[in-house]
Image (tube, rainbow, N blue to C red; front, side, top):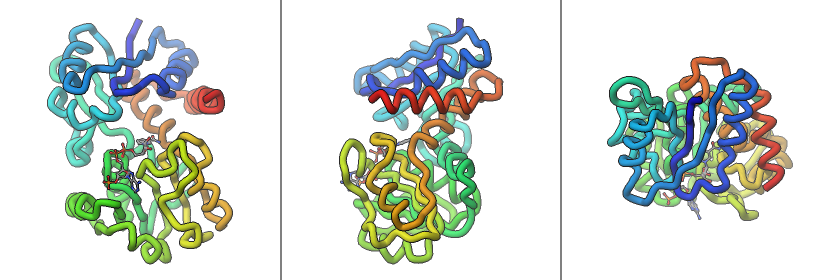
Length: 268
Ligand code: NAP
């Protein structure tokens, strides 16, 4: 039996176990996906311990995505983003990937959103970094707006064809934008949006990285403005699909993984 898993803290409500295990069942893999909560300073020890125990792959979530860089060889994209959310164990040093970037791009493509023109990324933490690199690498101009403006400027300096802003610039930035991605935690388990409703319009596609609740206030207001909306479970799905394929070498059964994810989301 192969063991895959997730390290983070907390991970109690993770949706990844049912999503991945639905995938293993569908392709007939004898595998389990388990969650681990190391202590605050134990991320590197956890990765080394998992390697020693023969764990085949790990996802990594808050607060360890940067810490685990010390224990892996990051691929070039994970190195540029400065965060790892997927570790593949093989011979020698484990490889670190960041599948959040491709997760966002695939979530938009799944909804027939053209990845071209200008994207506004709100937030410059772990998700914001990944999404900004992911969209810029696809050729989009990226405007990054963050509550702490210095963090937006720092990220924009690393991302090709990007600029950094404070949240006060959001209304102006959205006028000509094609894509908006919320990468802040605003809206998570609360009825708040990081963007003024009247700045949203029908030529926008809006992806909210927040997936709890599944229909955030931002997505409700975007739909009312006539925008295309993509919920955060799609991004979660495709970052998981990408990890599944890297680990197993099998084509991921996307529909079954999506169904398992959404079943669990509706239970919570
Ligand atoms: P993070 O690294 O802690 O970054 C949090 C971001 O939110 C920062 O940009 C922060 O701004 C901003 N922020 C926090 N509170 C705010 C407020 N009251 N007003 C305005 N901005 C605020 O977290 P993360 O890993 O990027 O995650 C962000 C969200 O994305 C979470 O809800 C997470 O669940 C979600 N996420 C989803 C997926 C997915 O697959 N769907 C993947 C990754 C993350 P400052 O820099 O000013 O603090």
